[in-house]
Amino acid sequence: MPDAKGTEGPDTVLVGVTGGIAAYKSCEIIRSMVKEGLDVHAVMTRNAQEFITPLTLQVLSGNPVWTETFHLTQEQEIGHISLVDRSSLFLIAPATANVLGKVAAGIADDLLTTMVCAATKIPVVFAPSMNVNMYQNPITQENIKRLKGLGYVFIEPEEGDLACGYQGVGRLADPQEIVEHVLSRLEPKDLQNERILVTAGPTEEAIDPVRFLTNPSSGKMGYAIARAAAQRGAQVTLISGPTACTPPLDVTLVRVRSAEEMRKAVMKAFPKSTTVIMAAAVSDFSPASRAKQKVKKQDASLTVKLKTTPDILFELGQKKQDRLLIGFAAETQSLVKNAKEKVEKKNLDLIVANDVSRKEIGFQSDSNQVKLIGPDGKVSELPFLPKRILAHRVLDQIEILRSRPGKKGRR
Ligand code: CTP
Image 1 (cartoon, rainbow, N blue to C red):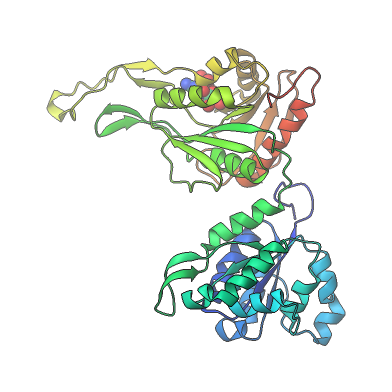
Image 2: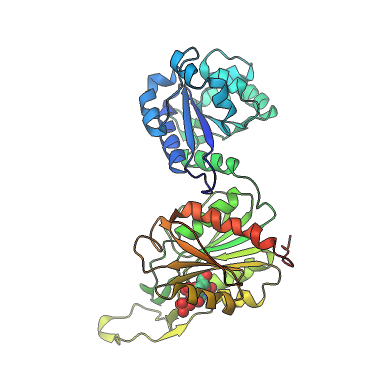
């Protein structure tokens, strides 16, 4: 099974579940991690098993769940220490006041705390969840401070309604944010010298206040690239047309509507960028004029006069200097020929060529199959991949492009 980049084996992640009401949220965390291609192994305390069963986590993780220190079969198969050794990260979610206290004091009196005690070479991440008074108790706060000082990582709990009926800090951080945090920690920070400008989604060109021209782009590809780049340490600005995508963590998001607005936002962010990836499906046409009021049916002529929009990527190609410029080509015919022409015309370092006539790939789908084409005309075909993995493959090209003779980044 490919890892997040679709190249090597998956990262193994340990998820420790302790006995709080938020234990049920570990189901969602584990499910999402598995969906992201991680090899997840759950470890549960006895108290956690009062809230959810090992069977639930076993089914969701696809791996046996660890519960007992002195369990003959579990120990015979792997051994808890070697499982820690081959893991890349240990997440404890939810982490109760009790487990924080035990780890801070060096106590290892059950399987979970024993494994945490052995996890000295990998990041250990706590996502606490408890009653607000327990959280604010000076002993808990002292324990957290001590653990942070020792290099343990915390995903802070949220403020709000707590399951115990109280209001305040203590609610487990959003499960999806916890997963994003973990993914981010697992990625090598190979893009930390890059400032990447990504565009995504369609544009909308208004005919009147209630009607517009657009296209079926979902924005998924551009958002996946922005998310993956941020996870790999890049500073990312994402300029997005209207989409339903969730904004990625640690990304500066600029929302725009029309091609003209996208152009303005891109030109503003461009000077500071080292790499630009234009994944947006910018509308090529917009109505020649926009009616101020809704056009009434009886007044409408059945013809909308169009004008062409600015070709943003072409303009960037004229002033790119040392920046890397990566475009996308959406084609319904002569994919390679048309994409090659775009590389030349727009002065690109790479184009990601996309056959949008194929229903199973392209605009709305979660996966895609593309060809990468550079100025030398060399075509490399990537396999059918989920867009989140494809995003990493496109980003892998940055280092390759930078290593070409005479090509240096503006750092
Ligand atoms: N692009 C752009 N500005 C436009 C149109 C496209 O910056 N007004 C960018 C897209 O973001 C993409 C690349 O140019 O990275 C190619 O877009 P595509 O729609 O495939 O090609 P076009 O240049 O629009 O040409 P055509 O529609 O004739 O194929």
